[in-house]
Image (cartoon, rainbow, N blue to C red; front, side, top):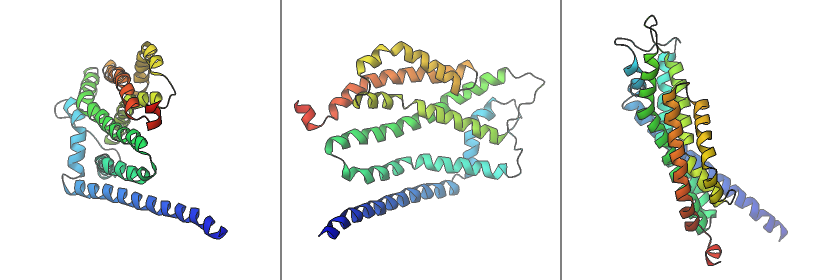
Length: 254
C-alpha cells in the first residue's frame, strides 16, 4: 500500500515532464514553421532590407551600409529572420505555456493569468512596432544632421543590428509598465494610492531610464520617456478594474 502511494506522486511528476516536453516541442515546431515560411517568402535579404529602411532613408543620396565581416552579408539577415520568426510565433509559444499551466489553476486564477499573458505580448510587440515606425526614422535623421560633410556615413550592418535589437528590446520592455503596475496592485505589494502619490517621481525616473537605455539624443529619450509616463497612467486606470475582475469568490463575498 505504501509503495502504491509513493508511486503516485512520481507518476504525476513524470506525466508533467512529458506534458512540458510536448509543449516545448510544439512551440519549437511553431517557430520552425514560421521561420521556414519567412525563408521562402520574402526571404532573409528582403527582411533585412525592410529592417534597414529607416537607416538607409537617413543616409546621403547614394550612400549604403557596409559589411566588414566575411560572412556578415549571410549571417546578419539570418539572425534577423530568426528573430522575426520568434516574434511572429510568440502568440503560439505563449499559448503552449498557457495550456501547460491552465489545468492546475482555479477559475479566478485563469482570469488573472490569461489577460496578463495576452496583454504583455501585445504591449511588447507594440513597443517594438512603435520603435521601428516612429522612433528610428526621427533618430537617424536627427543624428545625420550633425554629421560633418567631411565624413562618409556608412554604418556596418552588424553594428546596426546590435543597435536596433537593443532599442527594440528597450521599448518592448518599457511598454510593459501597465503590466508591472497591475501586478504590484493585484499582489498587494503596493497600494494604488501609493502609486498615484509617487507619480512625479515616476516621471523623473522615466526620463532617467530613457537617458540610460537610449542614444544620447533628445529625440529618442523623449520618444521613450513620454510613452512610459502615459503607460504608467494607463496602468493606474486599469489596475482597480483588473483587481475587481480577478478576485476569488471568497474575496468577493467578504
